[in-house]
Each structure stands twice: as structure tokens, then as C-alpha cells.
Length: 457
Ligand code: ADP
Ligand code: MG
Image 1: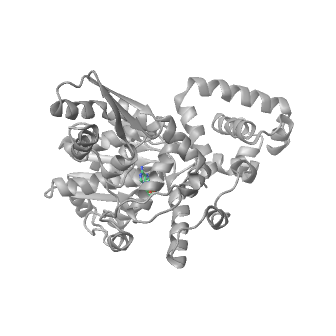
Image 2: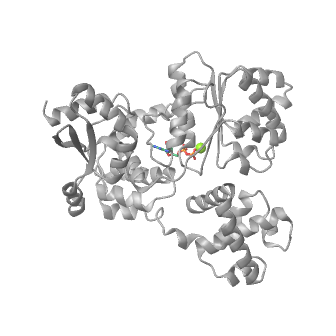
Image 3: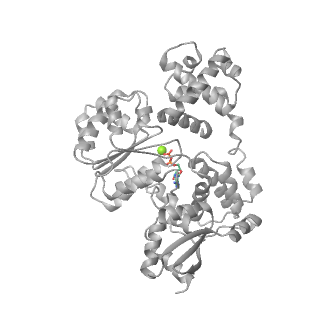
């Protein structure tokens, strides 16, 4: 078998083990460069693919290769220089055009409308359309494990991370996949707001028993954006009892939140400790390569062609979350529909002018104060005032720290923004938080979430 046939055979089998999105991301433009003394060298388009193949897929690839050819002892991955410089020299001409996949835009729109009324699941969110990278790998792996054996391994499962990073997508992909693999299981997906309003309605209509019956009968309960339960005591109480009833039966419970359970204010301790008793995974912001991979997958799903330099422009300028990336891409799609052609880089830049801005310029100290107050569930005016209460001092110090780190404000200016405090107060605050961030993962997480919102909001 010559090396091209060999690689084709490997790809053909790998396709069954890897989601189409990941397949397109990591294995496109790979080929065997050489085969000598049992050593096989595979060319990959960039370092990121190389790492990913080495760490994630090497075992599978090797296994398939050995089954075809017993003499193969080792597989190496290399980034071909020639391929790299070729893309650098002529980026304009490079386009991605990939065969049509079954979910073209028309069908996608149709499917959007078909949210299942019993489960509340939107069939658009699947594992196939989910791109995996280092930033969401753990959450993705845990989700896949849950789909195989709901209720047994990771229960409850708690995903957290900033807005637009794929939490809802993953949660719903789990639900959709279980619906497919276990048609008899009763699943329900809901947002925490909807759960709250159902609790309120049940109390008002004296139908609490009904409500409990409905929920405790579920095999899988998924509640999205659990942070909105903060301070809603009655709802938390119902959730606690529902949780216990399901958990005892070994039924799967899945939650998402914009922050870890520890950082949700006004969450009952007993509920918090339940959340912490299971698997907790976070999703963070995607790196450049994955942003590019996500864009390309979405373009490919629509069977469209958009220049590589346009994709790279998007991926390098829209960094904070995937929802924004999609929003920008949708503008390009709209242009495509109207003009029957892909936008050029210049056209793309002008289409996206309002979306792409240099982040540090648009963020004001006022915004920082607003976000910090919102995050710690307190009033902005308390943050600025003179109070020395511990629960106020700490968020204030966090706000000062962020102004220093992200906005590069001077200490006197920071003092001024907080009701005319002395610059030594600002210095003390920034140094204190700086030190604590090193020691406390919770605090580091909190600050990351606030920053994330700052740049995405
Ligand atoms: P969150 O719930 O964390 O705010 P969503 O799940 O709503 O974020 O994701 C925002 C958008 O980005 C959705 O349209 C989703 O399909 C898309 N998206 C998020 N993560 C991925 C991913 N890893 N691969 C492909 N699309 C993604
Ligand atoms: Mg969401």
C-alpha cells in the first residue's frame, strides 16, 4: 500500500471515532511525508494540530496503523516548512472550500424552530457541531462520559464559565445525545429562570405536589445558568429536595453557571455542598487556533467559502467568546446572501467595524465598578462609599486591582474614583489582591470572570 492510500485508510477509520467538527479541525490537510524503518512521519498544518494529534489521537492513529501494517513502530508529526511559508506568502488566494455537509443553512433554520416541548431541547446543539480545544476539553470529556452512562460517573455535573463559551451548547448536546441513545429516559432542560417561575406558579396554584411529581420522575434534569437562583430561597429549597430525590435514585443532574459554586452569592450552603459533591469543569476562552477552527467549521457547515485572511482577521480580533465570533460571522453570511459573493477583507473590516474595537479603549472605570458590584451582588454606591465592612472592602479592593491591572490607571486616579480615597489605600488594595490571587484559586476565578464580562459585554 503506498503512503497516500495508507493515510486514506487511517482517516477513513478515524472518522468513526472523532466528531465531524474535530475531524475537520485536526485532520484536514494532513498526509504521510515518509515511511522508513517502521517510522512514519505525518505532516500537519500547524503546531497546534501537531500537539493535539500527539496528545489526543496518537493512540488511536497508531492502533489503526498497526492493524493495517505490523511493521510500523512509531508515528511522528511534523509541521512542514514549505506548507507554512506558502500560506504566509499568499494568504489572499487561500480559500476554504469543503464539501457540503448535511446541515446546510436552510435546514438549520428549520431545526431551530423545532425545540422539543417536553424536553425543551434545541436539536441544533449537538456534539458533532461542537469544536473541542484545550479551553473546553475537560467539560467536553466529562459530558461524553455522562452520555455513555447517565447518572453513574459524574453526578451531579457542574459546568461553569463566562458568557458565550459553549455551556448551553454542551448541556443541550448531552440532552440531545441521551434522547437519541436512550429514548425511554425522561429528560428536561431548563433555565434557572424558568425553573423559578414554575416554582412560583406551583405555589400560587396550590399545585406544588404536581410540580414535585413531575420533576422527581425525571431521569435527567438539566438546569442552565444556576447563578440566577442567588437569593431565591423558596426555589432553592425546591431544587434541594428535587436534587436529593433524583440523586438517591441515581438519576443524572447537570448544572451550569457563570461561576463556580463557591462564588455564587446567596446560595444556600446545603445546595452549594451538593453541587461541589460531583464533577466540576470549567470552560474558558478559546485560543486563536480554536477560534479559527470554530469559524471554519461553521462556514463549512453552511457550504460557503470565505477567504482565509478574512477568517484570520475575525479570529484574531474577536477573542473573548464564541457567541461574538458567531455574531460577526452571521454578518458576513448576510453579506453573502445579499451580494452572492464572499466579502473581501476590506469589506469584512467595514462590516465588522462596530463589533471589533480595541478593548482597552472602551472600558471605563465606571464599567469596572458596575461589573464588580453586579458580580458581588451589591450596590455601586456602597462600593464607592467609605464603609469598612469586610463584605464591601474586599470587592472594592478587587475593583481597584482590576483598574490598575487592566486599565493601567494611576494609584491617585484609582483613589479618586472611589470617593476621593488616598493613593496609599489604592496601593495597599492592589498589592493585597495581587498576593491573594496567587494563593486563592477562587479569587483568581472570580477576577477572571469579571474580566471576561468586561471584555465581552
Ligand atoms: P454559554 O451558554 O456559555 O453562554 P452558548 O452555549 O450559548 O454559550 O454558546 C454561544 C454560541 O457559540 C452558540 O451558538 C454555540 O453553538 C456556539 N459555540 C459555543 N462553543 C462552541 C464550540 N466549542 N464549537 C462550536 N460552537 C460553539
Ligand atoms: Mg448559556
